[in-house]
Length: 197
Image (tube, rainbow, N blue to C red; front, side, top):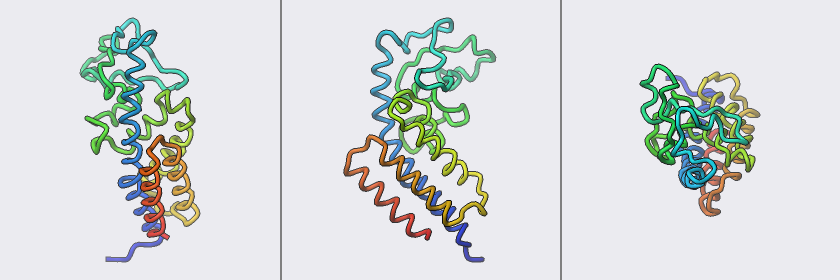
């Protein structure tokens, strides 16, 4: 078997970081923060748990992302969205509104939630739009996670590799993590970055 090229090594290390460092860091934050957001949204004037097919939110400003009601309450089985049950019954259902149907199979804020779903929530949930996390998350999703997923090995130059780590570091630094956890995630990221150089 041939040795890995430097580009293949960098691509591989970024994938490990997405799986072992970045996604767990995001999950640990959104699990708690989506619960808090849900608790606010069941109150007046939102009442997301009481929505009907004729009275529901299409998006949650300041986010401009359309909500995916297809992802909750077994709505995917309905041929028309006019029959959807739009009641958002728990925080997991709230999180699923912010992801594409293909990413909505997670069953908790745990290993079942992949990087695509985790980053989508950061990009679209109103609390992350308000605090600016969504801007960084969009860059990470587009330039790190999606480029890694498309596996165009030639783009994984040393400069691109360093840019990806800068973006992941910036996102982890922006997350509302306890300082000790943030320090540990950033240390892990740095150690993995060095392995791919």
